[in-house]
Image (cartoon, rainbow, N blue to C red; front, side, top):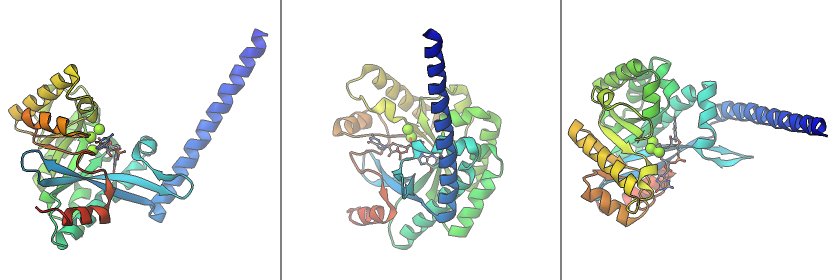
Length: 279
Ligand code: C2E
Ligand code: MG
Ligand code: MG
Ligand code: MG
């Protein structure tokens, strides 16, 4: 009986694993096709200055529009794209598309501030990332100062020396640099000090339970204090209610993005949103 159970358990796991492997293959194939057929989209979420209320930037967020799967959020396909290396060409598309759209908003007389693009570790580790950025800026005519690259704290730690070199090269170009998901990756403060970074982004995880949660409040305060003393600006993500915005402003956080102000939206909607604002 127990032998039988063991065999059933085995084949159950076996089937599950086979299914998971097939799903991965299908998704990998889907991602390649999406790249060829132009099925990726960028959605945009504004970032506001907490004191003046002005728009200071906008984050480009990737979506995959698939006929069978619908609009697929990035967390469902970016891990696989990273594992397979597909994130390199996908990321290059993201960069070019964000710069192109930002250029078109500038041409329409709008001021979106800096457009922030998420960049994954393999894009930086592959080598030549700074050349890709320089070429895209040249091709699209977007000023370097209108672009910001977001690198997660954890991807900085993969290959710290290379990351440091790439960051310095981007700074040389005049591109802004933000550390994303800050507080989740255990980077040493000593290391941070040597990076040519402009901003830290406080991860949504810490903002979510503010103002009630005491330990998240302590972390948020510490990140803000650290940023200020190292000369970085701070942006908080995932701000959903006014009480969070008020607290962050009081604590000295410069800017914020979140559902309180706007959810991510397609580029055309963002342009309309921007055009309708008094500033
Ligand atoms: P992230 O860069 O930390 O982006 C912030 C995420 O928080 C976005 O999710 C955004 O929609 C969501 N968010 C913003 N404000 C709020 C809020 O007030 N409440 C809640 N509940 N959520 C909020 P999204 O668009 O699903 O992206 C998830 C992650 O996927 C991003 O996290 C980023 O790590 C990654 N990602 C997105 N686009 C790209 C890309 O082009 N390249 C790479 N490598 N990663 C990307
Ligand atoms: Mg980001
Ligand atoms: Mg983030
Ligand atoms: Mg985050």
